[in-house]
Amino acid sequence: MLLALSTWSEIETFLQTSKTVVVPIGSNEQHGPTGLLGTDWLCPEIIAHQAQKQSDNVLVAPTFNIGMAQHHLAFPGTIFLRPSTFIAAIGDWVRSLGAHGFERIYFLNGHGGNVASIEAAFSEIYADYSFRGMRAPFALKLKNWWDLAGVNALANRQFPVGHGSHATPSEIAVTQWAYPETIKTAAYEPQIAPTGPIREALDFRARYADGRMGSDPAQATPEKGGELVAMAAKALIEDLAAFSAEQAPA
Ligand SMILES: [Zn+2]
Image (cartoon, rainbow, N blue to C red; front, side, top):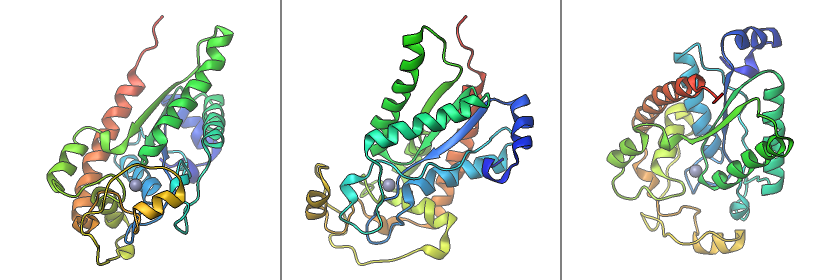
């Protein structure tokens, strides 16, 4: 079930049987010469949307699609939030969902650079309850899509060399599966991109001329993406069931 394609009364009814909601979260940033700008929010959205097709228990909120990407700003199309804005916005998303009675709010993340700030946002939210000596009415969970059960192992088998850390063949394969009409090709030079540190935008562009880090996206295929989505959607459904079943201590 997609929150954006539901009515308020359908959400009210859903809350009578489930208090769990998934928020895909990512980033809108350059992904090399062939990767879509939306890759990091498209991947968790594609997986979450697939999961809700397979299970009536899965409700997916709108995708939080702008994240931590200041280092990509020297490439056109990148849009980012600074950490303070991002953390504040996550807080308001969570408090809005919590106000309706959602007790399990699961962020399915598609951008490694978001992890520290999402964890900081959770801590800011919980701090309000801790200072007041109150129990939080909801539990928050962060999961990267590649950390869903079996997914990393599958990606390692599919791409044993040249997976890299940015504009990776696995994430590009997922978008190719969902949006085959957008598949692009390029002559990569070098075939496997360099690796190194991440600093500010001009430093990043100087180090990583075409935007990739350590990756060879030419290995991506829609078929491999479909395998990753199937594995991830199944694992997401199971992980959500376990999260929903968690009991708070007395
Ligand atoms: Zn990415």
